[in-house]
Image (cartoon, rainbow, N blue to C red):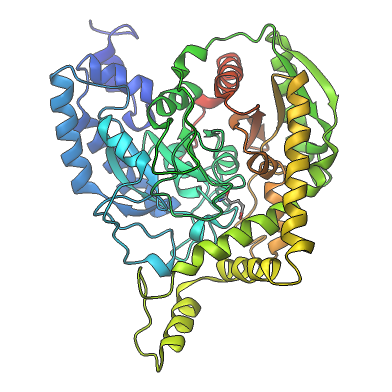
Length: 499
Ligand code: GLN
């Protein structure tokens, strides 16, 4: 074939390989129009070309990637392939990777090389993983802008002076600019969805327990969840098919059947009832975000969904306060293990054991991590436990019940992912409360343990806006269906930042 779209070879030659989705890359790999070695080379070149501008990667695993690509090509030649075989990926740097430094973007774990793989990494390896690197993040996943990385901030490719969101900012940027075809992130209060929204990619936080946390460095164990960061909804379904499922090594892992998520990708919303909770159109929300959201929800109506614009979830306003008691309390307990003895950084010039521990923690942790540890220690201390932690746990129950009631009437709820577009680097870094407000729309979902999907919904003054689709526990398929129908109808997911 000499010309035109019909020839995959011709099409491929004209294409930027780094902008491929998983399903496009898979098709080319399967048809032998492309090898994993070639694709991996293109991705590594892209990293060399753009990472000095966006700083998304903590570690580039070039040698490993080339080796895994060769292995993937062998599997492909033998006809033994999954949709992820040979497709280059980035892993957030709080998921353990055997033999590869896993820093959590903290000085504390600067030199930590895990002796084992996280369950998700194991699963991806079985599926034919090509890992090109580990992605930058807010230290220990605490933050909303990736500015809390102890290493360096990551820049948003839609405006290099802006934050990419956080804490999975490196993963989001990596996917948006083509430093990987897809990535894994983790989400405790919004860390997959908010950066996905800020970078105009798809971010999926599944139901708590749907994906094993084994080998994920713990932040707040009752809220943490791993999920996918991809260029479109089809890719999210493909990643979920591999990473979801029961794992006896995570005591909160759900022993619940895993469907084929690609079956839910149907481009029509007839028969679905959607609710728009007014509390998510909060004070302080930018006008541009609201305009994009109203248009997006109108589109869902056009696609056949029945939309109730006047839903109320009155306990939403307590979610932020409850989160900032629960998450720091759990973080305080989880981070007690960094004492300079068992893991990572250890202060060597100390005069006594206590001095060594104190100095290790003083120099090993950054300011936001220390703030959380202090908050958590205070909230859990004798005399304050009932007033803070116990109260927050009760609020958590109320929020969960309120969602349960709503899901009696609706198949899903629709909200903005964030109240603002990406803000300027430095703008909120000295004002923790302003920073915490970035997650007002996403953290109630972690508190309730339910799934949330963020899809690109459009742009306000050239900056991305994300739409969040929320459902009841284990309704991942419904969320994917809504996201898929929306992106098929609008095409926002196809826009790539120019860089
Ligand atoms: N930004 C929120 C926090 O700082 C959520 C982070 C996350 O989901 N890991 O806690």
